[in-house]
Every structure is written in structure tokens, then in C-alpha cells.
Image (tube, rainbow over all chains, first blue to last red; front, side, top):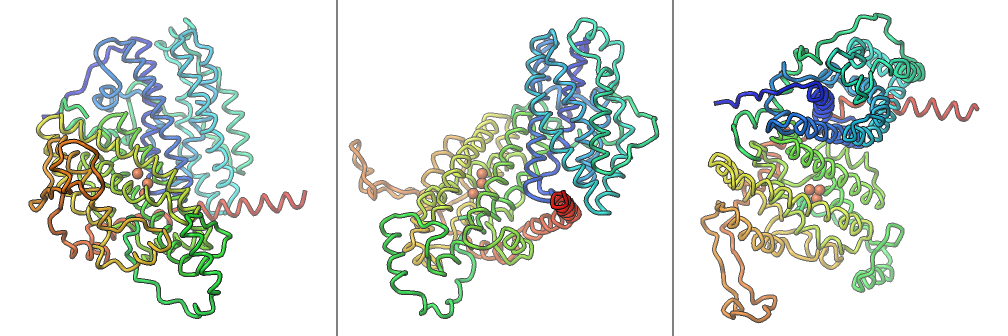
Length: 258
Length: 344
Ligand SMILES: [Fe+2]
Ligand SMILES: [Fe+2]
Ligand SMILES: [Fe+2]
């Protein structure tokens, strides 16, 4: 008997919190997949540390979602007992690690956004969110610095590393647009000053990314086409596999406490 | 422990007679006086070689030890367990790094030592050649493997070689935290459903004997103990440490309601056990005695025939090979930057 998935009453605030928590959890999980595979020990540790920060952010956001929903769900039910279509994360976060360059490009794209986003969110009129933002902002600044440094090193390293990291930039580029989306649900929270409109961060993100790509001697892709769907639960093929691993124990032993 | 006195004894170094007898005597006096030997101090070549081998094997064990637990990070059953396990594996990487740094003070580079690991020339603890098959193994490893590591490493905090002793002080604090976390996983399983309890018992059944073997061969067979004892690298014999471990383990297993898979296990009362109260002195307390250890299994695992020896090393080799382009790129970038700086 498998445990059935939970139902979530997605009020605008709950939906918003799950989206941001899912980004952090899924990306953190991806980084944790690097254990034992890093190119050098220090990097294996750095990837694990970033992963830990993200999992920590996810837990704070899920805890707040549980409180806001007040329906008996908790961080583990949100993480382990929702199926892929109930997950609300960015497609970018669930993309596979690929090689080290691809992982670093994914991190750069996300962290360049998260750094701006959480800094702006420290002004939220919601005190809980402002506090989560203050902690996440500090962590994201380090994630951005670390991933930028690596993208620059790899882009301006050897011919091989340049080619690999350019390929990663091209591969992941179409998943960057989704970060700036703000649908009607989130709009109501923007109006109440609970959250900020991510579209307002677009120019600053472009500025950061252009600077890093240029120092890395990499080319910014021209194709403006962007993939979307993650926020509404329409994911890439990759998420189901990730969840089947992550949720395996919880789903196999329904109702057990760990 | 993580070193198990495994390698063949060092071949007697040539021209040792040339080593200044006066320096050697002064060195032993310092050791006897419990002074710490530092990297730049004079030391006998054999002391340097023994320590380099022991510390690098310990470092390798930390690094290989990340793999069996890394196997469950993506499947940890709650977010709290996932974060704690990931942090633990990070700590082990950190231990590996301090230990490589401590070994480097003796003159070998981390790269050389790491190459010896990848080539199969260097050894690491036999325990990491066993598979982690269920979530309960994360509990059993923390409780038993980290627990055994602590027994061994606490005395190493007083090792005569300063850099190793200091690394051990830092490492031991984290290892005891790991042990508590592991035990806490076991407590949760043993208070859980019958399936969870069976999972915990199965993990104990599989890890008990390999953990007893972690302390290395019985005292009669150990090749370098005497010299290491004189040098105050080793403070307790393999059997003494194994005994301390077992004496601590039995009541912990009992508290969990688990059975040690050892039909020969028995309590041997000491003279003091008859005394109801009053301070017990060392040597009067009784001891738990384990049944016969299958040393043939231990030798097989050391010889490379454990269930996971090949996998563990090939995983590290693959990671090293797959990361070559990253290391090359970092070096090329650093060289370009240095060149630019010189030109500026
Ligand atoms: Fe360790
Ligand atoms: Fe250790
Ligand atoms: Fe440990």
C-alpha cells in the first residue's frame, strides 16, 4: 500500500510559499546528489554547503506554509507526499546536474536571481517572510559569488571547459524566464506588499549575468524563447525521477515516523 | 582504527645506523615527557613514515566513508534527517581535509597521498567496504562506526605528534555528535512500526561484526603496536579498545531492545561486581566478552574482496577522472590571471 498524496489548500500565500520552498528544496536536493562525485574535495564540500543552505530555506518556507494553511500538513508532508504535478518549483531547479559546469551555470542563473530577490524581500510587510528573506539573502550572496567565480574560471579556462560551459549556458537559458513571472495569484500578494514583483528584478539580473558571461568570455544566447509551467505544476521529465528517489522511504512505509 | 595496523610493516630503512643516536635518545626523552613533537622538530625516519601512513589512511577513510552515507542522502526520509545526514557527510570531508593537511606537515603532498588511494596502494578502513542497504544503516553507522571511531580517536588526541593530536581534538567533537545522531535514528526506528524495528535489527546484524573488526587484528598479530606504543602514537592496544567499545555497546543495544548477533556474548564479572556500592577501581569491573571474530572475513576485505571494495575505489576514480577538465581549467585560468598580473 502506498501512501496517498496530501491535498493542499493553495490560498495565494500558501501557493506562493510552496513555490519558493520547492525551488529551494529541489535545487538543494540536486546539489546533494554531488556527494562522492566532485572534481575536488573542496568543491564537493562547497556544493554540499550550498545544498544545505537551500534545504534550510525550504524548511523555513514550508513551516510557514504549514502555519498559513493550518490544515495539519507539515514540512515533510509537503516534501514527501506531493506528486510531481503538485510541485510548484521552477523548471530550472529540477534540471539534472550534468557536468560540474552545468551545475555551476544552473546555480549562477538561480543565485543571481535569489540574491536580488531575497534582498528585495527583506522589505516585505509580512514579518515572517522578511525574516526568512534576511537569512536567505546572506546565503544567496555567497552562492552567487561562488558560482560566478566558477563560471568565469571555466569559461576563461581551457578550450574544453569553455565549450562545455557555453553548452550549459545554451542548454539552461530557456529556463531563466520563469523566475520573473508573476501570475494573477501572486499579483494579489504584490498588491498587499507581502511580496515583490520579480519582474522588477529583470534589469539587475541581466546586468549581473552579462558581467559574468563577459568576464567568462561566454556568449549570451540570442533565442528569446522561454519555457514555463513549473509554477503551475507542469514539469519536465526530470522531476518525477527526482521525487521517486527522494520520497521512496516515506512512500514505502506509510505513516511511519522517522 | 581507521588505520587498523594494516599495511605490511615498513621495510627496515637503510642506513638507519647513521641516524644520530643522540638525537634519537633526545627525541624519545621528549616523547616520554609527553611533549608534543612538531613538524619542524627532528624525528626518526621510521616515526615520520609510520605517522604519514597512519594519518593518510585515516584521511582516506574519512573520504571513502562519505560514499556509503552519501548513498542515502537523496533518500533520507525527512527533511531534518536529510539536512543532518548531508551535514554529517560534509563533516567527514572536512575531517579528510584536516587530516591530509596534518599528514602534509610530514612531507608528503595531498596529491601524492590521494593518488595512492586511487591506485589502490594506500589502505582505508575495512568498514567502508560494506554496503548501506536500508535507512537503518544510517543509524547503525552513526551509532557503531562513529562510536568505534571515537573510542580510537580520543586517545589519539594525546598522540605525540602535535598536528595529528590537534586535528583529532577537532574531529572527535564532531564524531561524538555523529554518534548521537546515529543513535537517535536507531531510537526512532526501535520505537516505530514493527517493520522499522526489524530494519534496525537487520542493520545491527550486518554492522556488529565488521565494527568489532574495525579495531584491527588481535593484539598477538598486530605488527606495529610495540613501536607505536613507545612513540606514544598508540595508547591502547586493539583488543583494549575493542573491549571498551563492546562494554559501551551492550547496554546501548539493550536500551534499544535490539539483540547483538553474537551467540557467544557473555558477561564476565570482575571482583568488584560483587561489591554493592563503593567506588570501583579499574580492573575490578566486569567485562562483556564477544564470541569468536571471523578474522578470515577481515583479511578478505583487506585483500580487496569485501562486498564494495571495487565500487568504492572506482567511484572515487571516476569522480577524479570526470573532474580532470575542471581542475585543468582552474589551473589554466589561474595561470592566465598570474600572467596578466605580471604584465600589469
Ligand atoms: Fe570523521
Ligand atoms: Fe574518523
Ligand atoms: Fe563521523
